[in-house]
Amino acid sequence: MAERRGGRPDDEGGTGVATRTRTRTKQPTPYRVLMLNDDYTPMEFVVLCLQRFFRMSMEEATRVMLHVHQKGVGVCGTFTYEVAETKVTQVMDFARQNQHPLQCTMEKA
Image (cartoon, rainbow, N blue to C red; front, side, top):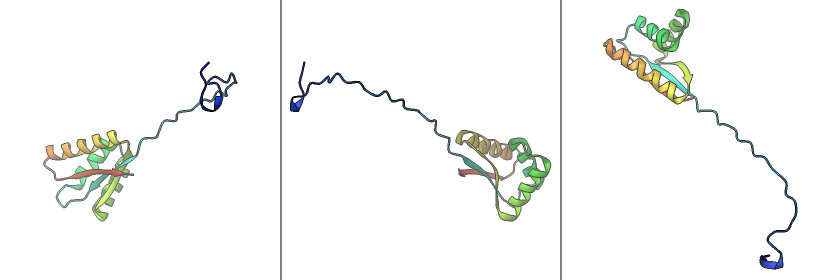
């Protein structure tokens, strides 16, 4: 048997304690999708976007639209990075197709 420094053998013949490590999946970082106010996009179009892309009711979409109109920015929802990025792109593309300058962005929640 090979010996380590100090004259002790490598294999001490003792019993070890079995430990089990638990892996925990990390929650994805949430991102807020924000809609920015402008003076040219009709309010009805903003409500349509909120209903179509964020599945809001007419009342909820109107409330968010008014908040965006009065405060300059409003939260449309909180999602994972990929979902938030997709929603921002969908809103921006839809606005461009309809010739509106509506801006949508995202930030870490």
